[in-house]
Image (cartoon, rainbow, N blue to C red; front, side, top):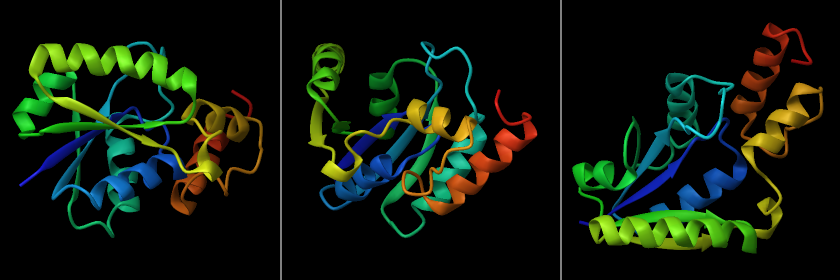
Length: 164
């Protein structure tokens, strides 16, 4: 049984994230989507539990995918889950520079390899931070995130009084 870990903050989950998760699920017997609290991001739009719920909803059609959240080192979590691989999506060369260093550190710490999947071209510009920014100012994000996530974004920004 091969287990892969797809880590990210998923704040919110985008169609690009979903594309990587779906493609990973075709190559591994089990995929653990690991929702992390990114310490480099000062404030999340959605709680860990909300992100976990959104991911469960949009991956419900994938029988071999489960959603978990964690704190600490990714490689420790990967070992606890029995993962033999970490899978990351790459949008651009700038992603590769950062992700390569992380992959090398993770391999050194644990022996767990990282596999990179290039993002499908239609999603190469997407990032959660850009989606949040567009949504915050009332832009249409319906082609960037699953429909249920677009609804939650609209509701969240309405709760915050629109332009937060």
